[in-house]
Image (cartoon, rainbow, N blue to C red):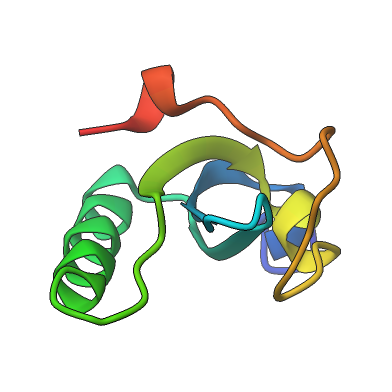
Length: 91
């Protein structure tokens, strides 16, 4: 806890979006501790990519620690150790 009595952002658990690409890479972004906000972001991201000429193979939520998202590369990650649990977060 910090002086204000709240946990610093990096110590929070919540949700992030994971976007899978046809070349085997993925993106992990948009951390939020709130499920309702995560679901809105998921819907918006899916809607954005739905009509594009290049589309991800999947977009879903993963339960994640904020520090994992903060330290994650913005694009083109291939690490197998990244959070990936669509069965718990997919709508």
